[in-house]
Length: 208
Image (cartoon, rainbow, N blue to C red; front, side, top):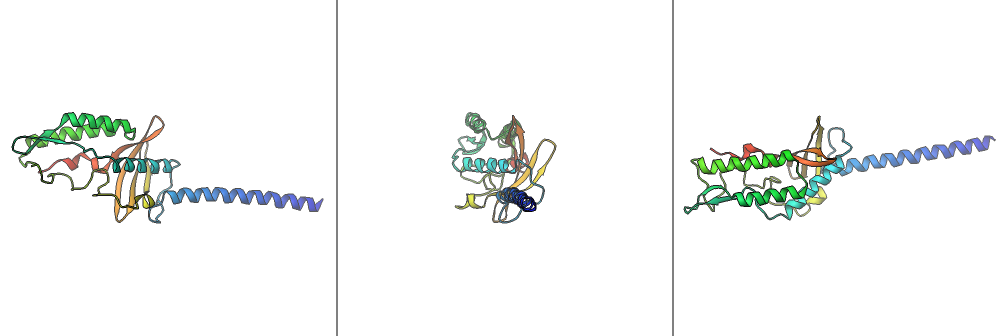
């Protein structure tokens, strides 16, 4: 009887150890998937962190293959941009909506940027000429604050500093090299979507 009890005890402890190891491995894997350049996220990881990472990857993969411009202007006979090309802008809004990446809040902000730029192009005494760099922004893509993607981006892309708010999550994505890009996401109909990208802040589209 004693031998049988010891055997049952050993079997039970073995099962507990296997379960603990499996759970531990799953937790470590989740943290590794949410790391950037070996640095762990500095706050507790929300259960949806991997979905946020997938959303970020899908957004950047879409942008990498996207050759359409944002807020395309129209010019006059003096090669001065005098306003937004509203036909092109309308088509762009449809494209963005079809990706299903963006909240209604993001789309509203995108439209407001177009209206603001149109006003600046018409009224600002500092003119934007064809062939010149725009007098707003930082000469980088709004989608990534970069000129182009590194060849090994998908090996190093990660998210960090996730912060859970009442109805919104904020975080940074990075592929290293000192790049940290601020994002906010919201749940819309049970799906995480982009609510804010730092490159599309309205303050970036005004110039003196």
